Image: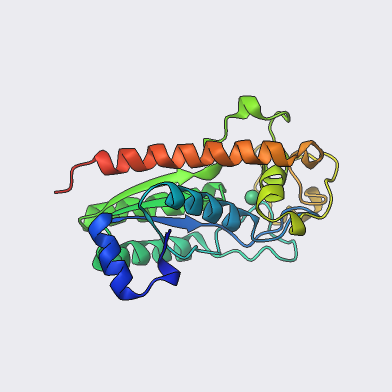
Length: 237
Ligand SMILES: [Zn+2]
């Protein structure tokens, strides 16, 4: 498995003979209810990337542990950066990957906030406009077939994420709390939403299981494998 952080430069140089494609996992440091750890989004993206790298040649970069978190702000443990900072960081990274010999980068984000995704998209668009690099942007959450999810509208720290964490780090899952869907304003822009968020869950963790977690994980892995095929089917110029 080609984990960039564990390789020395001679191994990386040799690896580049096999593939010039790299996955950049992006997550967040964010509250995930009273039962899941703050690196839930990061570790999910990283574990999917690693599993993909076990099945085919592809590099995996060290993950970005910080993202843009809006709806969970105000909780202890949600450490958000600004969209500008994320955009600049990811753009710099894309340029640096290209300078290091990587020609195709798949950004796999485990966090799916609106402003977070927009910042990643902007960085990707700027990178391909300015450099000879191919970039794909994949949101891990979109790879889950919702017809296989018991909870309608399951989201943050709910059935899906709790199931996946049972597979990845069961030791860090502290119970399976009841379902919780906080009311959210439809149109109103609020300064602070902490009082609406209750315990920070938006879904139903009580429906989580390891079996489901394995299935959700496999859906993500298959989705990333397909995205890599698309990315590599693009001719290099
Ligand atoms: Zn999450």
